[in-house]
Length: 274
Image (cartoon, rainbow, N blue to C red):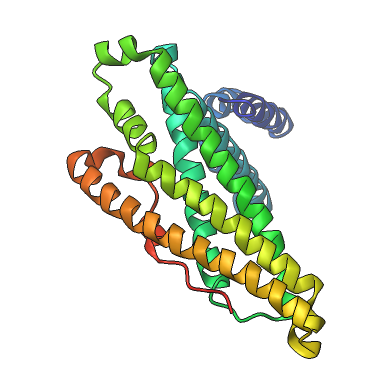
C-alpha cells in the first residue's frame, strides 16, 4: 500500500516549494501539501487566483488516478491476505473449497449450454461446434473432479484436525461427493458425453450418406450409434433424478454447503438430439 502516494506527495510538495520561492509565499505551504496533498487546490488558487484553473484540473486528474491505483492495490492486497491470520491447514481447506465452488459453477454453466445444444436439430455447420464444445466440457468436468478429489483427500488426511476445530462443513461436502448417487451421476454424465460425441462425429463424417444418399450401411450404423446414445441419455436422466432427490434431502440437513453443490440449473433432463 502507498506505492505511489508518498512519491506523489513529495512531488507536489517540491512543486509547491518552487512556487513559494518564485512568488515569495510562506514556505510552510510546501510542508502542508506534503502532509496533506488534498490541500493543494487551496494553495493553487491562493497563489494564482483565477489563473490556477488549469493547474487545478491537472491536480484533480492526477490525484484521482493516484487514489484509484492505491485503492486497487489495497483491495488486491486485502483479498490476497484475508486468510493470513488463520492456521495453514485452515487456509488450505478454504482455498480448496473455493476452488471446488468455482469449478462447480463452471460445470453448471457448461451443462446448461449442453442442455440447449441437445435440443438443436442436426445441421452440418453445427455438428463440429457441438463436438468442440463437448471437448471443452470434458476439460471443465476434469477440473471439477480434480477439485473434488483434492478436497476429499485433504479432509481425510487431516481428519483429526477438523474434528478438533469443529469444521463439520468440510466433511459434509466430502459426504456429498462420495455418495453413491452423486458418483453414479458423474459416471453416467461421462458415458452420455462419450456416446453423444460418437454419434455427432459419425453423423458429421457421413452427413451426406445419412441425410441425402441414405445408404443402407450408413443408416444401419447411424441407428446403432443413436441407440447407444439414447440408452446413455435415459441412464443419465435416471441417475440425475436420483442425484437431485439426494441433493435436496442433503441440503435440508446441511444447508450451509449449498454453494459447493451442483446448481438448480443442473436439474433439467437431457432431451434427445435429432
